[in-house]
Image (tube, rainbow, N blue to C red):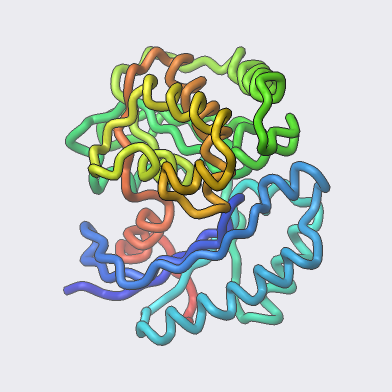
Length: 302
């Protein structure tokens, strides 16, 4: 019998809540709520999370808990990823969130983040049988090898869209010099990235990947090709921000992640010699929901 759970991640671009019904194998989304808080870029620039963004997070967690309770979720589980991990004031921030919203936030490791993503991705990518998984966020890029239903070696690199923007000043309008600077930064961090075996089939997940996919594939085709990323990079360099929003039918804040996201994914695909990757509609939140249903995550009462 299906039960209702809520999972939320404080990521490097958004704080995102999913409320879903699950039987432990399938996840049926009931509520999807997100607040755009570009922590990856902010932490890369300042080293901590300022008061304004901390206030946003507290307000978001209050709302998330309220929505979970209204949906009669049995438990809610909230976790923080790269931007929270690297912020110098994360302990004070998590204490404040707990005191003012009643929400406990677990700070998870890059490995655990990759595991949750893999559990979620398997819901729609198992038949594609990927042997490598990429997830680019706002603060980092996760690379994990896959062997059937097992996760192998995992690497975390400082190649999130917010990190790239902060480290290379990659802001609109994009000059060729800025794009070259960003590409050089990405290549520097990928230079010594090695895996035991060469992958043949790749899958990608997360908000940045889905943003690229929706921009390029209104037809719903889940394959993302190198040539499409090259086109997106070419187009976003030449279009105004307003024209980018209109052409690719994206929200203004997501429009700013298209170019850095495409640059990182293009570099990853070229590094591992993948002509195309499969885009999963699922990820860490769905993985957390399934883990709650299976008794591997306890969560708290909403």
